[in-house]
Image 1 (cartoon, rainbow, N blue to C red):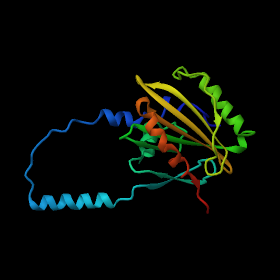
Image 2 (image 1 turned 180 degrees about the vertical axis):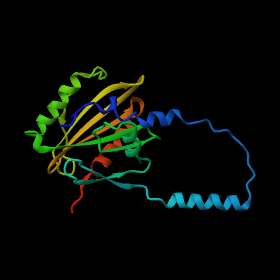
Image 3 (image 1 turned 120 degrees about the vertical axis):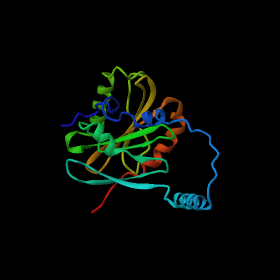
Length: 212
């Protein structure tokens, strides 16, 4: 069985948004004289950028049974699965994404329902794991029932934690699917949490199993 509820923050998700925000280099203010050709190229590029879709549909699979799911990432979010899995080959997460501008990331894990008696057994295991984690500041961490997501039983646990000297807020959602428990973990810099969390439901409600 996979390392269920191991805090992804400690292993995977080297929190790409953190490296992103620290790698920004100051831009030197320069006055440039552009030719008519350059101006035209710039306008064409701008036009193409404006025509890009604001949302992007991505897919991921349950590695145990190959069932496929889809998720819609709003404007500003990027699929970082390939990079995160390369950096953390032992991770159990199946999908990652980040919004570098607002300093928030997410990871998705999937567990088979047949391995647990019910959703409460699954989330209780998570609570026990949280209790042993020294980086979590506001213990005990408990999962509470929330409004169903896509008509499915759902729970949420939120806690403050620390990574590389930075204060973060983690929101752990568990959605009961047809055959799986879908765990979606969001991390946000503490200062941006209140703003970032308003967009979580849009992403969560977009997660659906692909019918074949």
